[in-house]
Image (cartoon, rainbow, N blue to C red; front, side, top):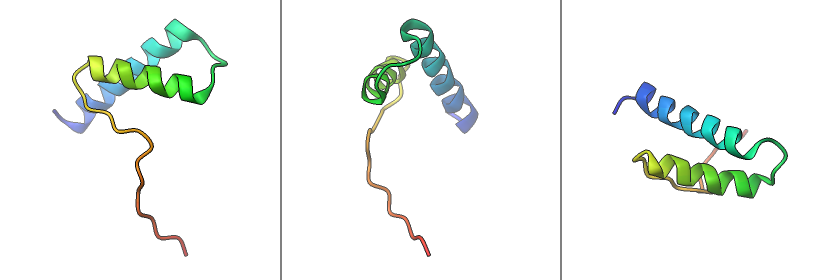
Length: 56
């Protein structure tokens, strides 16, 4: 799957989530539902991962 295909899946899942739930929910709720929608579309999801970063 290409990066564009992955992005399309994620945007579609986000649109579906927003359409179903509407605005104004807690971030944690939106994050959970979005993860479920993305997984339903066949992608693996990792949430709240630590990412090494260097800031000067």
